[in-house]
Image (tube, rainbow, N blue to C red):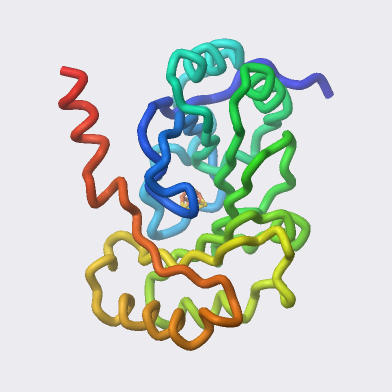
Length: 217
Ligand code: SF4
């Protein structure tokens, strides 16, 4: 199969990474269209249909990333792993960028990545071989029960590559004391034997999208 030279794009933007171990770092984002998983709490449902969005040439995406000073390019979605990303990764690397991906882990990865975030979803659990490649595992916590549910399903022992298991409240619950207390308890109980980290979606607290759009006016 020839490697495709275009991808369906929802948006590209330059911001800071709002989640995970690179939280707060400058990054260029490529948000691709397409996700067959369709979680109830999805905050990017506009990405679900691969036919929507703009079909962009990979060269144009790389040129847009090169215009910004960020060393990191984050490929996200949607579920970016439904696409063949080999050409995009190769050209971003040739441009001197680090390539990060955010995936549910439910699909085989096609491309070379410098940092892999796996955020498992109940509706379509991750493939063990992808979970084993995760640099960080981001668990979306929508109820106290979700913590035990996911901790039981993670590989044991954890792959050496996995530096953190992030407990991130689903955003509509980010001020729910039941969820926040459960995350706190989990970190206190298991955080010395597992690399658990309590976290948030920093960009949403900053409302960084709105700030950025105002700054560009
Ligand atoms: S996997 Fe991610 S993009 Fe897909 S529906 Fe779930 S939250 Fe949304």
